[in-house]
Amino acid sequence: MLATEKNTPLINALIQAVVTHDDFETWRLKGKHPADVVTKLCKSLKTEAPFSGQPSRFYASAEKAVNYIFKSWFTLQSRLQRQITGKQMWLTILKGDDKLTEMCGQDLEAIREKAAQVLAQVEKAVETDKTSGPGKSAKDLIRAQLFKKHDGAKQPLIRCATAYLLKNGGKLPEKPEDPEKFTQRRRKAEIQVQRLQDQIEARIPKGRDLTGQAWLSTLLTATTTVPKDNREHKQWQDKLLAQPRTIPFPILFETNEDLVWSLNQTGRLCVRFNGLSEHTFQIYCDQRQLPWFQRFLEDQTTKRASKNQHSSALFALRSARISWQESDRKGHPWDTHYLTLSCTVDVRLWSAEGTEDVRQEKAVETAKVLTRLSEKSSLSDTQQSYAKRLTSTLERLNSPFDRPSQPRYQGEPHLIIGLSLGWDNPLTLAVWNAQTQEVLAYRSLRQLLGKDYALFLRQRREQGKQSHERHKAQRQGKNNQFGTSNLGEHVDRLLAKAIVVTAQQYRAGSIAVPKLDNIREILQAEIEAKAEQKAPGSVEGQKRYAKQYRTSIHKWSYGRLLDQVGSKAAQAGLALEAVKQPWQKTAGEMAKAVAIAAYESRQTVVS
Image 1 (tube, rainbow, N blue to C red):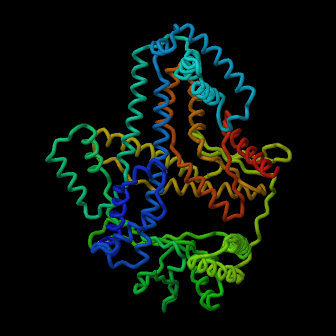
Image 2: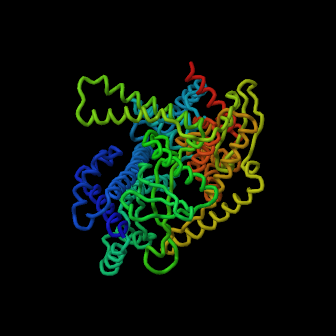
Image 3: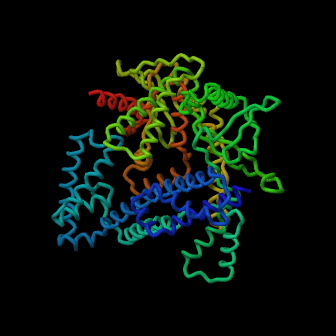
């Protein structure tokens, strides 16, 4: 009831207050909001009748939730804005042949001659400087040089020549331009810009409508009012077809001492939460999770027994949250929904060796802050209290926790596991030896999964079927937001485990993973290379094949997969190196190139 009748409405009100703030548009353009704005808004709202009477932890949780929502939202908005800016710049370049001749005062033949000269210069520059674009194909590098030359061109003929090359894919076309097809192409680009602008305006956070009043209000408006235009009609339709969120926002506990652990009379683990201390909850979990909960109890017991001589900075538990999982049962919400507890842990704190590493890191960080404070001529009362707490923390960090010893994994630093990502092969592994410059082994996704490869095929079928069902629902104007199973996440965990096992078998010192900031370029280059093989010399045929390939190929969550790899690597004591994925013709060669790029990056840092 606290979460449903007070906390979630408070979060909804805070979201609305941020959205309607006078400086909201400024924050959106900057890509972030001030750190204290939500705290100030919450302070003014929590005295009002609908939101008052909550535990202080619930107010802090509401602030954190809203900050998380807008931090991610502003990041997405910045990305969309960059896409809009890029496409708008492209529209200024994308002009028909007749418009280009008019702009420079030359005929088309003169533009083609100049374009040939410019292209020869750019190709020569790209050939000379092969290191200027890691992770990009030669075609991408040529286009980048053409854009740069277009922006810096002062002569109209050069600007028109580079624009002519850019709109024709960095090549001199053999056939004359079809005006009707070009008009369709430009209109398509304009529609893309408009769709992105609609997304920016439509994706404002709205909170959770637990009572369904907002949905009913939209239904009433849609059935009694004539929409002004198709855009307004689409907004109403989207709201009515959206999957309703009928469960409250989770309650966040960012301090590990907000949870108090104990054993009841039957020996079952129990937990109490600050703000809800009158309630004691029993823990029900899997056997693989049970040792972690037991460790949480041991950590707190150790600290209490030593009369707070140990630091909670070394607790295995870092943060937690209470959330609700929906079910189909009928009755009161507290009877129909499952209450779940999600905990974040630092896997290094499981062993004595890992705990010592964390202790040293935190001691160094704390000492640095104290040094900066001591260098100031005078400190405020708040700063003095802060310095006193840090001094106390530094002393308590020297009290070790009694934890089991686990020998550290010792890999060979010259052996590197390189991973490549792609469309056809979502993941490929290469074991590279930096001393001999040889690849010791390659592993495809099928080889890594082994008997579990059938799960990958099953997920691909499920995703294809769901994509088809979503397309049908969209055409019929029905609800197209379908739930997804956890099969993809399970396959990611299996892959991450197989990668770590392979690294341990070869005694590799690190795992090199691709950065995702250029993954789109890599995937696009892979599609274009396949299209050129299937339809050589035919631009239209290549476009058709690329479109069919995108719709048929498996869509992979690369970020989620790399998160799992990072988690498993940390547990095993393997270092993780993130580098840009250079473009190569095969997935195996790209995995090798990632390993080489990680080694070269390491050498650059050392030098």
